[in-house]
View 1 (cartoon, rainbow over the protein chains, first blue to last red):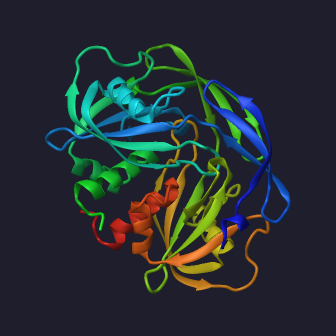
View 2 (view 1 turned 135 degrees about the vertical axis):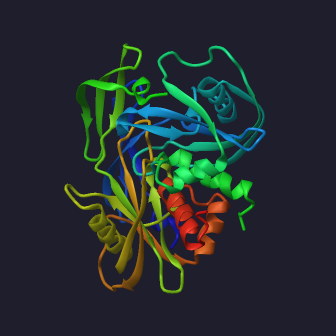
Length: 185
Length: 185
């Protein structure tokens, strides 16, 4: 089937809600069958997630409370792009701010959309090596994180047992598993 | 670190936007350090995604235009829970509505949160077997989908090459890969 039979075209766009974090648009669109419909979605600056791998193969993870889902979750370090920020710089900045580590090697792995039904957010995945831990204050005083290191196998076990439920962390761990174990065949 | 040092407590909650699809709340919360802050988030009914596996090992996939990201994407069949709907029933309903297949075997694999920063959406993953294709009209006339079958290896190749970018589809394929290849070790 050609893409023409699937694509919806924008007729008009209206910002209907604008908060500190969330911005909602409603667009009027032309459907492939000639009818019109409305599409509601969040506009988002995009984000970066980092898999920090230590010399011994362990990775750096966090535990963080996430209010929307009302749970403390295991996560990889990540964060939103600042306005105009390069995603690679965002990845390095968030790695340092959230964990205190800097890296001297960072590699883009892939990107994905967490929420195609109602958000334009795109998340870029980076693998970071050559890590150095810096003591002292690096974090936002109103961000509450527990930083930990664990073996990659332990992270996979948590994933297998349903203890890791955040999409960016799941996708990044599965992706790193393929790469680190050379199983992309 | 104890969870008490991470958890934020609700003080008050206010619905600030309500569209046909999206509903935005802003809650005032008490932070672990005694300060207060605001949390903006989408409330969502939850969803189910299905990995339909045919007798010969091929899977059923879709291509669908997603307006928020302005692309035609490869996806597994999926959809939102109707009000009060059991997720398993939702999975079977969406499988039929989107692909025309019914199944006589369906198994829950796991669940995840696509977007913990600003949505309470939870997606449940199901593996469906014993598929029967029903001819005739099963789809929503204003939903435009291309249904296809492909080998599981082909789906993994698309994933490896960055051609599958939807979080629910990536996570479900990685998960099925672990199970079908017996690699959860």
